[in-house]
Amino acid sequence: MLQRMYTAYGIVASQFKQRLSPLVTFTGFILLHGLVTVGLVADRVFFPALRRTKISGPIVIVGNPRSGTTFLHRFLVEHELGAGMRIWKMLYPSPTLQVPLQPLLPLLEKISPARHHAHAAHETNLTAIETDDPSLLFRYFDGLFLYGFFYAWSKTETLDGFEQRFVANAERDFNWYESLWRRNLVSEKRDRVVAKLFSLSLRLPQFLRRFPDAKVLYMVRDPLETVPSGLSLVTGVLDGRFGFWSLPLEQRQHFIENMYAALLRLSLRFHEDYTSGRIPPDNLYIVTFPRLMQQFDVVMDDILKFVDVEPSAELKQTIRSIADKQRRYKSAHQYDLARFGLTEERIRRDYAVIYDTFLQDASLNESSLSESGSNDEAGSEQAAAESQQVSPA
Image 1 (cartoon, helix red, strand yellow):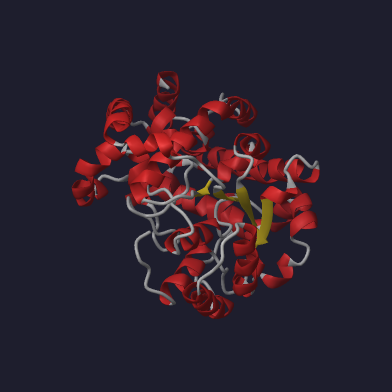
Image 2 (cartoon, one colour):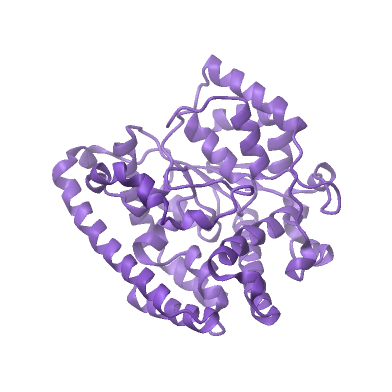
């Protein structure tokens, strides 16, 4: 972990000419790691229920960022199909630590990294249900968040090398997920996990060998939508923290090209495992974004059957209400490919196998980038929020 921090510090210092601020941040990470370690040990004394808590039939949402995963994840958690991870509980996964820290959340929110997000595109905060991927950054200073915010700037750290190490660390990371999820089940008083892990696209067969009863919902959306939207989200965070768009063009484009390659790798690696039969069909249900938007009620009926959940009358009514709103919703967001040095032709060429396998009809259902905008996750979340009063999960 210290070696990775040293590498990341060197990247930040050279790329952004900042030395003191990242030093303070990384020192905080080390202190956090020590505090959490103490809390994990204390949990064995103060939360004996952990010894009896098992991970059974986890629901895991996988798919590239901005493909509709956040909306589906939060919907399942908010309607009590299981427990999802909140950002602050990934930072402080020990229930022993959570008890005294919970009253301090308003204060912690002021220094949270989530404050750099553009909320119009992706609303989040410390208590929001979020992807489980940053838990690896918080615990080991590793994972795809390390690559996306640090190593993608490097001239020496390659994507191939990073992926090899990432896959090699699967056992360590899956052990951590299990420990994290068990604690969250106890903390949230639930008996089933609902996780979101876009990084599983790189090692889904290994994950299913470790959790053979997992139910994986894989989200697919037109790359002409997900690629610029995903890049916009990441660069928006970096712009808020480091002034990304004021950096020299060559420096920005180096980062964007590395991020583009990483997003492409996620899609192609899943496609390779899927078409080669390395993913058991009983563990997988594929959801395309156009169907989620236009046939939400039909898709949810399929999903609930797949995850062995019998919906209540109230849930059925909520699904019908959201389905009606999503069919009529149009997002105001527009994404300019040229801003990222990309073209439609390049994306269609690079993602050709994704279009051929999963999205032959999808391009007919989604708006082009040159028109009024795109149906995105923010739109899905707004449609859900307008149709219901969400109770805490």
